Image (tube, rainbow, N blue to C red; front, side):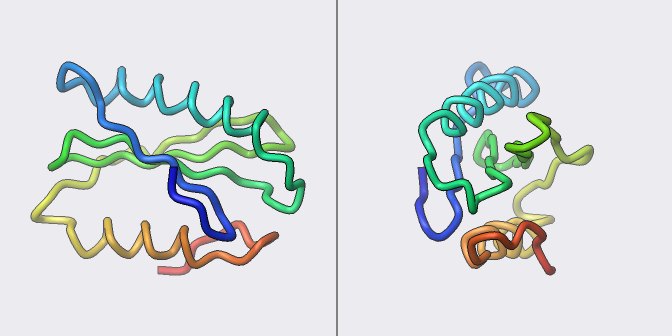
Length: 101
């Protein structure tokens, strides 16, 4: 768990299964929702990775809705995009919920 004005959970997928890993990420986001007391944080962010493959997800705390990116990002092809997403999430201010790339 990386904490800033936003929280970001990054987990490693087990058994080289990115989709199964996303299920684990969803469970972690739900647990973080129960743990996080600040209501100013509307969206919780997470990522699941195999090291070279990354998939991102969010939990909308008000709607209780989990969303995931359709497309996976890979290293080295999408390294710049992956870092842009990570930095964007950690740079968000409380109440701000969209990442500008």
